[in-house]
Amino acid sequence: MTSPQAVTPELRQWIIEQARAGCPPDTVLAAMRSSGWDEAVALEALNHTLQDVLGSEAAAQAVAQALPQPVAVPEPALEGSPSVLWAHDREVTVLLTMRHPRVVVFGGLLSHAECDELVAAAAPRMARSETVVNATGGNEVNAARTSDGMFFGRGELPICARIERRIAALVRWPVVNGEGLQVLHYRPGAEYKPHHDYFDPAQPGMAAVLRRGGQRVGTLVMYLNTPQQGGGTVFPDVQLEVAPIKGNAVFFSYDRPHAATRTLHGGAPVLAGDKWVATKWLREGEFA
Image (cartoon, rainbow, N blue to C red; front, side, top):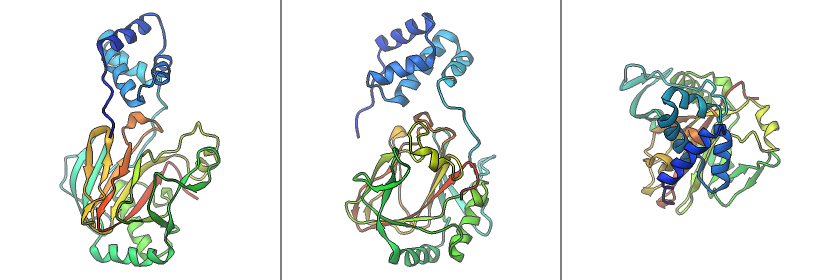
């Protein structure tokens, strides 16, 4: 993992000078990106510096102008900090919550028998995992993703339909707005390097992808077994690692296709044993 970039007094002074010269925040942000600054670090530096100069409310408005507009996202019923949630047909425990990024770790979302059933149903259909190609909207094998995987159609099997109804109740998002479950198998040494799950609308191949239900706005990763060592879900922007415990799940949402959501995440290498997960991606609209 690379060391975070340091926001120096010289950079802050430069931002102040640009603001006083009338440069809009999106222009300043673009200049920082072209100079090699990580976008999330640049946004934080811009926000904090403008707060000092303009005041918090004006700074928030200025920085917001440089970002895509936020949209509604799935959200569990966490008002009042409950320790247990009812998810359609099962009690699920709340093990961890974060606001920014919005991350929630759930305990016991799936029973061990359900985990085993999903693995058994998916195993005969596994093939090398692919990623979406920005230029075309198609899929291809990528060296950053060294797992095997397969997709179920939404509601393809009774167990899929049951889990999808449970997820919909848990995060308060329609079943029809979800992609089918994807099951992944990571052998020793396999990983998925840090990435974002949203689609970059600036890329030429994404228009066709976005027509099938709009932008992705949430992800739920369910652990179908417990590896002997390694294989956690990592969030590098906030130095968080979620342990892959059978039956548990990690949920995160992103209200705009931008690094400011701090939802950069990856699957850490499996060091011993293997790892099985089921991933559910949630869209803005009905996925077809």
